[in-house]
Length: 122
Image 1: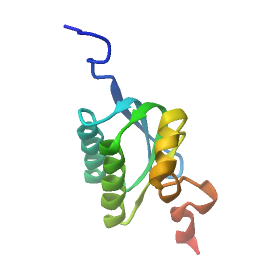
Image 2: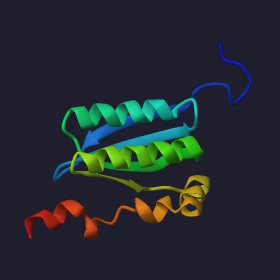
Image 3: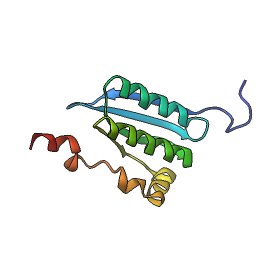
Image 4: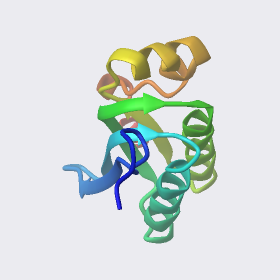
């Protein structure tokens, strides 16, 4: 049963293998207290499969609150502990603004030219 607007859970996490290794996680909808655990579960599952380089695509994300920010930080810490990284890309609108305000945009900014994985060959 669907109640008033805003009461339905509108959040999805999908992931695809990236060329050159790692995984691209595509988030869509609203990342908040009710949906952040689903992101954490997805990240944990990927880490358990040995995927330690995660690129999180926020192009479809329309909302992110402090629990979403915490989930990104937790994911980055877990990836780093496993020898990898978590990076954010594609944020727009409100999501982009909150990432900039919290400093996460800079901390977890995805820059292909500074990909930590690319330095492993030096």
